[in-house]
Image (cartoon, rainbow, N blue to C red; front, top):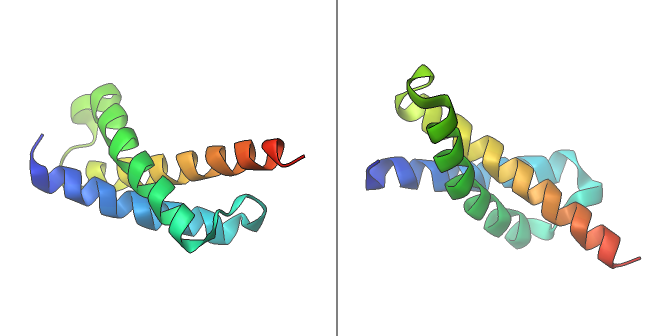
Length: 87
């Protein structure tokens, strides 16, 4: 993995986190929270999906998909945990 792939995953994660926050307002963390969770999820998700899927999805398509999905999932998980803790 190179630095370009990581940057693409992080940016895709930020976009995925904000898209999930816009779609699921109940779990939204605000613009900054969605972005931070998305970036972290994009980096982690991109690595995991790249490892699991391997050569089935290569290049920037895999980086974008992995980052966006990872960012959205982590943002929703953090939103759920935040909601549970506030009750």
